[in-house]
Amino acid sequence: EESAMEPIEYHGYSIVPRPIVRSDGRYTVNVEICRARGGTEHRRVFHADDGIAYLLHEEASYEAYNLARRLIDRGAVRL
Image 1 (cartoon, rainbow, N blue to C red):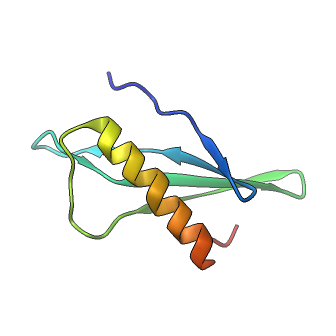
Image 2: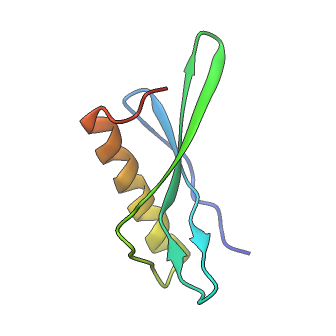
Image 3: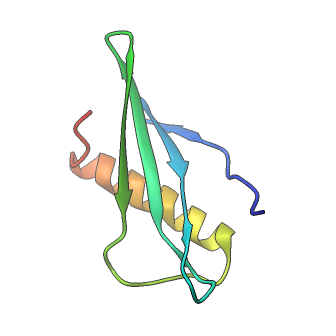
């Protein structure tokens, strides 16, 4: 079982990496972005559509953090 990466806080959002292992054993970049608003936690899952997969769970997790930060910085996350 892969170790879970810790959520990080970024500009009021919580970022949780959720790499998915493919049939070839490589990991794709998926990330859950959460934000509490009005007493309710809102969540969305995003994935990288660049087709890149990583050998290590940790690599995909770090790329998930980066993807989430870019999406938040661009204003692409609406929660």
